[in-house]
Image (cartoon, chains in turn yellow, purple):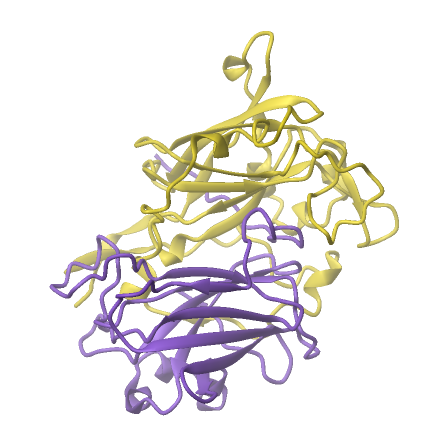
Length: 233
Length: 187
């Protein structure tokens, strides 16, 4: 059969594995270059998670517990696309985040901020045929971390995407437009300067719901395919 | 129309309980064909310290060598209930476990077959990009002519080869750096 390989990411897209300002990378980044692998069936196939049954409630992080969580309710929506602008239909989108006070529902998070018994912080949704997805959640808080003196993570939501292939797997973080902490965050700034703004959502007045919630838009672009076909036995 | 790729970011330390909720994933429910195996994948940093907050995902063909994916159009059986995907967090000892079946061989684009392998994605705090690697099976006669292993310098090939640890248990240590740094692939 004939298939098209996924394009290699353009230089200046992804962070360097070793980004010393983010201290945890020092002992956790390979020093040798990755071995270039021709894409085979192992790389152009991948988990589509089509059999995974999602509850309708999983896309609304404000309705997973007994009562509404504290914080500013927001809508986060966007499209999952490839580099050619084609929708990634039925993409599974997974998110997780801290609560409005900046604390994760996780035993390892010891930040001196309250846990919210009504906020768990995990959500999943399946995009529609045009790649559109939508979550309702609360705006996550900023929180301090131990990377350097007075280090604070800007408010962010973690995103996990599979796309159509093993080669398109992506985990990233969505930030909020104009957050003053972005300038000081070594994780955000590990992304090359020309690409990092892609991780900022945009305020989406059109999508706000009057009397109810503001909205942010975050489109996610996964690897597209080469124009030249490859042979695959 | 051209759209710019979304950059990668670290999974961070706080994905457990939301994105993932287990240290051992079961891929193959009863009835799935093939040799039952267990994979124990240990994650280490450059200094050899265990990484207890890493996420390992695996993707593999079934025992017939068929991927459960529309682009694998070969006339080979699919197994009901077996997608071939597993996700498990490393535990306090830095180990993620998977119950699965030994995968069959899949083709190499230029002809012939690859040695049986499991595709692996590694995520962790301090890891900014997904790290892709593979797990092969020690003692497999097909290793000698595997076209992917041939791309790797001989001294580093053992970083990709799991050892049988009695019964159906296979162990592999992934090293993010250091003298035993694992081979990662750009596929």
